[in-house]
Image (cartoon, rainbow, N blue to C red):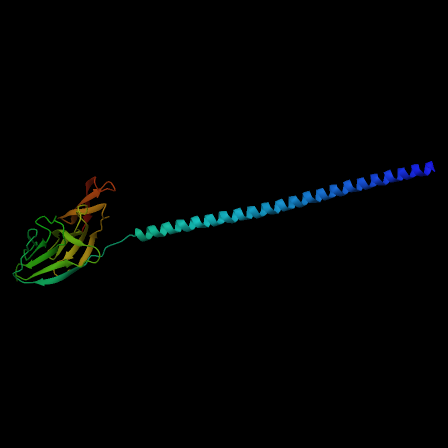
Length: 242
């Protein structure tokens, strides 16, 4: 009887040990599976985060590119390379029409035609839009050559005879103390046909006078040295007429 009881106790202890061992192994397995699962979840989250970061960086890069293009386009719109097309129109005047606020008359080389700038004062330095008066010294006929202005308020500022039919004329803005000169053109006093001689980089560079010397043109240029148009210097430029 005692032996049976003892064997029973041993069997019970053995079964308990087996149960505890199995439980420990099961818990270890669950723990390992949970760890693996947590690692997998963490890895997936990291991949998603990395993917979102990459997407955000791409979007930011794309946005920067768009901004750069916009700035460039804006600069192109606001700061275009604009060439002003100057045109003159011929208007007949009465034979007794006289200028009232003009430069002195300048006779052509053959002494048949005379010209002056009306509306800008005796030195053509006053603000305002002037015009060129022309008189035929033989017939007495008179006419004016007026700039056809669009948005720009341009005016003749200087004239000099080039030959018996053509004068050189400086055309620039009629108002403002900065714009004292302009670009240089050749103008036929009979037909009002015009062609460009020298296109100045206005307002930084302006032609203020021109003189024909044999087969060349001597240009006097005013060049501003700063963005405030305070400091400036003069330069000479020679053009070949041939």
